Length: 388
Image 1 (tube, helix red, strand yellow):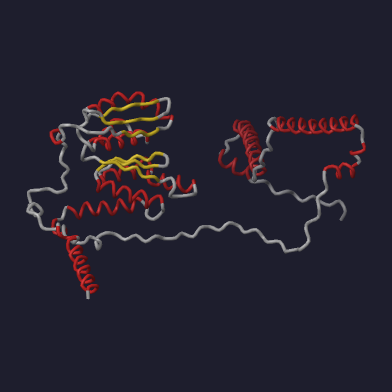
Image 2 (cartoon, rainbow, N blue to C red):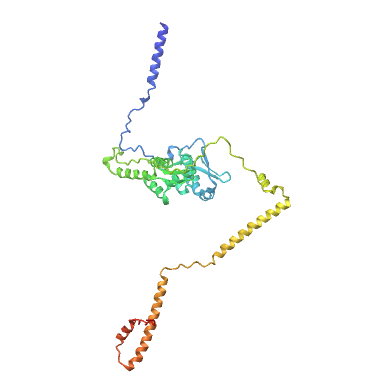
């Protein structure tokens, strides 16, 4: 009986504990939840009066930078240091180790500003210009560094897809910047983006889809443009937009297969051993020659090769001075014959003119009739045969 009583009390205690650990006991409606005057998504600017005593511990972050950024960082560091000083953050540039360090001081009031300073030095190391990187210190500006180097194994494919993201004359990148409202910089194996949380989420998705070859950035641009237009219509505010957005199916383009090598018939026996250099020398008899004779033979072969080469070079030089063969035109013989006919006609006309001048004084003759008459060749008289 005593055991039963103990078991029952134990079960009662467990039930009470379970009731106490109820998850939704704090999930009660608050009066400010449904207040239309309160914007729950608005990030209020930090007021130093919220933390008048400052921070108890010193927090610091450091990052290394590539050597090619050293000169630029050295020039832009005074600007960066002045921007961080306003928020009470100390900055240090170590050129020996190639690192940048940011740390809190006694003047620091905002506890989150050290995270913003860490993002600033990360962006500077990823080739973002200093005036643009300093904007990340604002409360409304966030940043994201997307690593794309390990998404594709093949380097050639990676370079092509990265260029696809940039586009011709950076047109694709500019379009993405306008539609997402983010600053995007593609550098090496990373993509640095700066903007709102919503824009950064879109940029990350577009970049990963492009590098993994899931969707071309141009299709993402089309979808974003349509969403911009749909946002303007207040009637579609609370509706699902999937029916309006285009759906792109991925097409697998068949690649050209390389020429397959013809397989040789299988033979269990290995191929015959190729003769070595010494075997070839023994066959030619060169192996048994003395060192002097070998040197003489080598020199002769060298001279022969040189002579062949010089003869070939001489022939190539002389080719420039050989005149090309003239192409014989068809009908050139006809032209020559025509020229001869014209010359003979001119000579005959001159002779007729002289004869006409002589006869004019004796008798009156019509010149047109004379030329026409003389133009006709008189019929040849038949010769009388001597033998009847």
